[in-house]
Image 1 (spheres, rainbow, N blue to C red):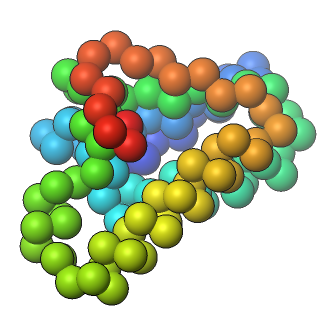
Image 2 (cartoon, helix red, strand yellow):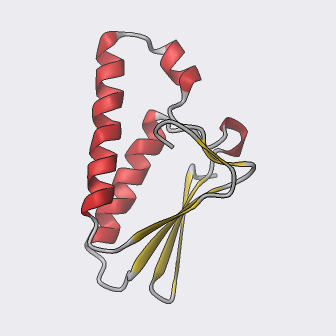
Length: 110
């Protein structure tokens, strides 16, 4: 199953972080998926608003600390934080408004 779910309905696009066992933490793969989805949405005139949501008990627990511990090289850390910065910039540059549907834990980059 996909780590990022997209649902489009009546001009509303919902992106759901789908790693509930990891509290929807932001892995490298998740950040890449979010950036790809945002790039698509930015070009889609039928999307009027974007909703970010999290599956399960948490909205987003920030960076995936387990992944970071397993890849503790300086190169990986730098690439991860650059990717996170890129995601955050793209999110703020979207022409559509973005609503975070936070229902529980939302920490750090989450």
